[in-house]
Length: 238
Image 1 (cartoon, rainbow, N blue to C red):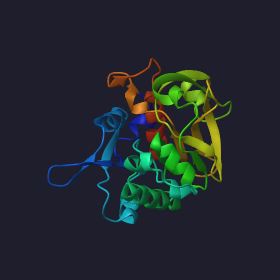
Image 2 (tube, helix red, strand yellow):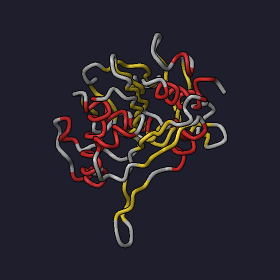
Image 3 (tube, one colour):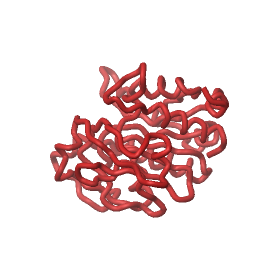
């Protein structure tokens, strides 16, 4: 383990959550793989319950991980909600993650987006999404190859190309202000990773927490370096 990773031992990462209906109340829900992956590289996960001051949380935690989940309400990028998509949106989660992202970006603290998270980040900075990909069959519960951008943050960590898992039917259509593409799908050119030009904001369309040796291995690619890099950058202040 490198010195950079060792410096993350007191790092606390706020992780956004989804909800599920419970017998008596709605339940906060999140995969334990996020917590286990962060812990593997020295970080501690704090699960956001969806209430309380986003400003306080941004002050008291070191970084934000926007987790995977359902669709963002299309009103955020100028589209209309169709009947078949209504069950996939959670407007309370949209509002919460929007405010969390605003607070963390205002403080220039690291943000890492996963799947839904990359889409939230893009829309936050003014981008738009494909509501349903024409090539959704390539991306819904599949494994496919992505190609990383030369000079981008991913290539030194993961190489020029790699197989990733894929659990989405939406994707970035137009980039938000200040964002750069750092990986695309080899099959159809769909944007698979981004980073911000000046803020410590990075995101991937796949689920790296499901690709860590000893935790879960959807593909042969190892995503430990992504979490190690996120924790190291957080410990160094971005």
